[in-house]
Length: 199
Ligand code: FES
Image 1 (tube, rainbow, N blue to C red):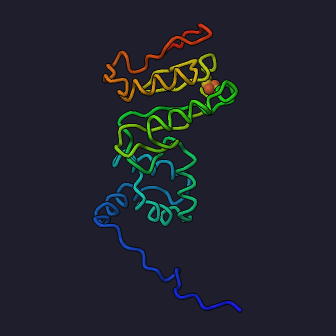
Image 2 (image 1 turned 90 degrees about the horizontal axis):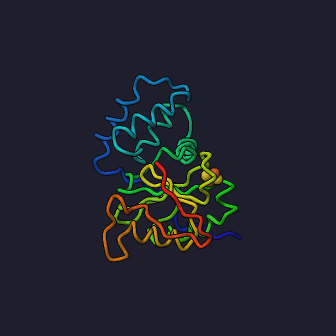
Image 3 (image 1 turned 90 degrees about the vertical axis):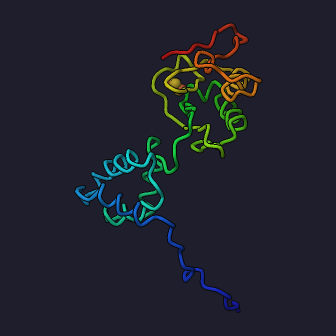
């Protein structure tokens, strides 16, 4: 026999988010003229993110109601589009290419090194908000694989040790804050294939 549960989690009240009334009113204004047809959903994300810098989680239920869908679909759609985020952007975002050429050349170990040094998970932000990691797709620059992109620069081909050195330099762990010109600098590759930075 099953014992009676001591509580019913479905009845647990959801606490309103403080200060959300004004925020929800603003989001309502932003999406008011959009069609409930889901073709306007990306436009809604764009407007909200342009206003707040990200899509606040309070917006999810509002968007679901507007576009006649479920919060799960809204969350899933946000998750699918790497340009849409649900937290403020980091001061510096490092993009890690998840494409096949980079993977074949060992980019997974570079990813692990970046996550450890920058202290954030993929598609997350460090606790101090200074660094973010973002998974991106191949954009055809495979001659630089494995690579990372940072502030519009392409950095590769990278070995793991070069990626570690680059990330530490970016973070200032080598004892000096990187200057603009140094921020993407990496060491000499063991196979003499000099990693390059390209705009
Ligand atoms: S697979 Fe990474 S740039 Fe093409």
